[in-house]
Length: 569
Image (cartoon, rainbow, N blue to C red):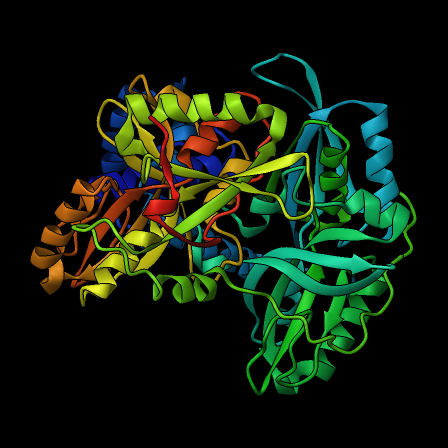
């Protein structure tokens, strides 16, 4: 288990990363104290020497230290359980530090930071989206920088983040609770409903970051045709605050900040997201929408959300804007379908008996083009042959696509099957996280985690779409796999180990069974629980995509019997 020294060093790296500057021991000690770590300058210097030795920081003369690229990587990967908690606390900190006065137009706002090559066509697309009003604000700051890796000149664009609005609500005395990042469907320029959501408090990545892949949004199509999906955030406020909130939005609009998609009524669903009684839901467009449009057009854009704060008066309008979206009107009855609700209904139907190898299991179904099928199966077979433990099961099934004759489905066994088997045997197994497990010399560790609860998408689908795996490289001892963490009561662990042994004998894989309350591959397990890590059933398909074959991954899709499946090798 990581000790207190590890946590302090992570906080030092985080301070250096947030400040993006060379800092001395005194400044770092002051920042640590604000975070609850009472370290003097001498102790900070001790920790910094360790970080220097690990090449996570670099000493710059007598001025202090700066974080290295290796340090940034470690910060992203290390103490993943802490990163899950940190993401939401980071947003809370940004909200608290927002000081913009909507009357004087003075103060600090939260900004996203995006970088991209200076390409006139990319900039024209970005300007087109700002002009359409699909942003929090047309106010931006553009500067130039040199890419340290390519040594090419890049544009750095700071755009106002929707978190600024949360800060403004709080400054008006309105308690605000950010809940989800997601994407909203638009038809005839009318926002209709959220199609996907990820909870802020349940992930190691910023929720909207999950939807910045070029295939996840269609902002450009919304602007030009009125149809598509756009990034958006969802928060709730107390029901009696609506009038006050509406007045605040009017003040913000007067100084060039808007982004409001819809504000609901007391206890009313908003764009398909249920809201409790005495609360009001508010949907705000993602401040990164213009950059998403450029990504959709094929341009390489590096987007960092809610990255820092800056003075409002440093931002200038990129062009005039008029919001093309129409009012969404009454709720149409469509609701967001959360993954875990779907999963539980399939889990309770699992009746697979590992000893007789009979009964229902849960299957993923992913699609490839028919012409790529043979090559895809060869790649999958290679993964199963060399590293069978990286796959939930060596069994698969070919299924037809109900709408597209040029595509074919490949069904693989889903690791949630194991939850179903344990529950059938009287052990409550709860799927907690889908993650990315990094395989390296010092042992596996989770470097990304997204909770199954609070998400409408299977986390593994997100990781595949964002090219975050390297399953083929893992065959040689270093790479990134899809894996899942589930929890069971610690008292049930001895019996669970017996059942899991039978499960492995039947051909299903289990990577690790943790001890009670133990970190499992760097992932936190609740007290009085034991963690179980299983490989993702989509790992073979992730390997296929890594080799350049287009894959549409679909997890937790249906039930299948082992007798219906073929062994891939």
